Image (cartoon, rainbow over all chains, first blue to last red; front, side):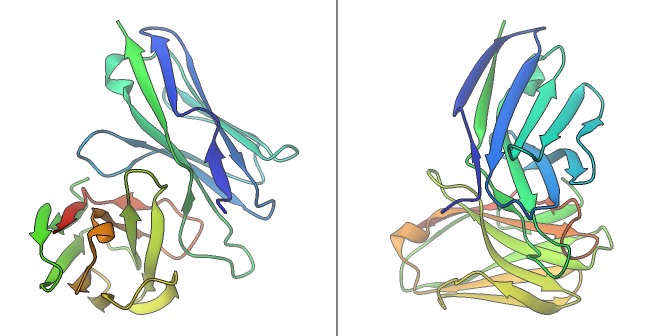
Length: 115
Length: 113
């Protein structure tokens, strides 16, 4: 089965509001997490990443929170804009100690921005 | 996105055809990856190469054959595919193996008829 999954397939928010996209993972050994954004007809685009020794990391308008106790990852987007409409994927990697090289992805959440 | 290029962007092939997908990265990375993205499944890792050596093969059928002649180029050779192989095939690269951001190309949309 999947080790990474998303709670909601579609999230609709008003333009200007904050968005929160959630992700659950099952591999407690995962030590690297990453969020991607994929627009129609394009490949996934890096948004932000976080390592397991942190619980919060901020970027430009985005924040990733990691709760290792409940194996939960979230992406917060501040003041969402029409250009934020896309499918968002979380992914995990267990690398330390000789784990996997590739990323394990969740199914994705489609973020829709309402005008 | 321009750091990783893929050709062709679209490909339609019959089940008896042989074709190849090409990926090139201009980022000086050491690791390259093939992923498959189907409509109803998460992105699935297929192959990983690090310094031209294959480090992972995720139980991919032999009708998919990867080739990595150097750290900048990655190919996926296709033969006798099935209709269920129709998907978006994404190439990615990263600085090194595991634990690093992967940069994706735009993908090749493959349709097997």
